[in-house]
Length: 440
Image (cartoon, rainbow, N blue to C red; front, side, top):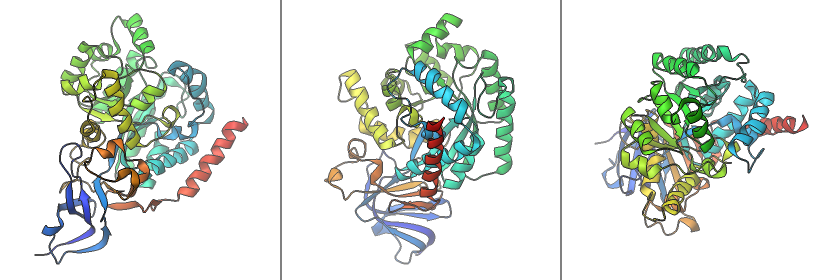
């Protein structure tokens, strides 16, 4: 018996379902075109197997690519621009003004491409991105080879690309239509309403209706701060979650981001509406927004994923670091070392995140029939020696340990070198944009 494939990864430790299954110590992954065709032990690999390209992963670990459930990629330009501030001061006095002055199609393209470089180099193969001028981000992710859900931002204020807020839904509809017409592989359009406090009830309902008509995901920041909870309660007499529920916005196609301040009733609403939640612990920590009740949400059976948020509030896009923060934050918050074990953090960053984004049948695991999105980590490093258990991926590994990133069957990064595009060119463009940022 023999078989042929396009790409064959051999001799690696294969982690097919992080957080759920133990690694296979000496295995292979076979890929044909954009799809995984076989995963198994080297002893079971037919001797006459042929491949157009073979990667020897001896001493390395092969696992699914990470899934970043929430990002504002173009905000790499604002990395470190305004640190150590409360959320509302950070937004209203620094970020919103900077966006009004400097966000352009050129900025959205090159800064999203820089984010793609950072994510690819640190093992993220899928991202859910939400921002303005998202057609430029869509092109950047397409050109970088990443798998991306790209959500056009909607807000009831003048915004980049939509100076008249009355046309925000129209602009979002045009964005979705353009994405569909372009038919870019790996790119899926979506809608992103910034928050309940920046979008009116009318805007929220129209945006959700558009998302339903186009069968696309509806993203929204929700219950991120005490200020938001207080404001929505003063205006509507209920919590932000209850407010969206009353507007009929919560269902299986809605993805709520942050969800820091939730009551037990809020958690019940999210569970029974099948709303997915993306947690961004490092951003919440940095902005002192609070600690999301992730253990309670997990116990309730809510679909959960992990996100980085944007570089302006993190300040990096390394999901290995995000997993470490997620696990340790909840241990200290609950004074219980058994809370949020590494296995749960791993699952949120892979298959859990994929399921939350509606991509569970495509990515997040290594199995025949799924898209070939995988990464190879170099285990031959002092901080990963000895490698007793894959929990060390959460508590010891770093994005810089990723040796190779494969997306849709294409090797986009190998031996720490991006192959899909010119990283130096991208960084040069962003540096030029940053110079203009400081000169005005």
